[in-house]
Length: 71
Image (spheres, rainbow, N blue to C red):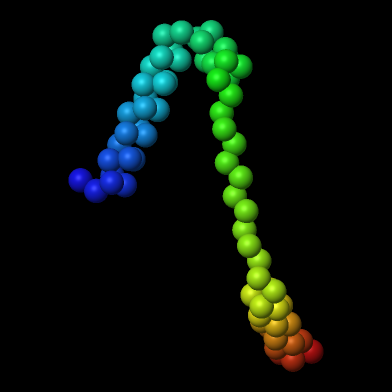
């Protein structure tokens, strides 16, 4: 098995075990987040000036072509 397949199967098994535990102990699900806070993942994207100007140029060209076609 490949690593991604193993990771997906492990995630599903873990999720199902958590659901089973939650069904057995309804009060534990509410207390768990207060006891162990989850780490937040922050994703930052890097925008390069050349990429931005290229996208802007494409949008301007498309706008000009639409103006030419419709007017």
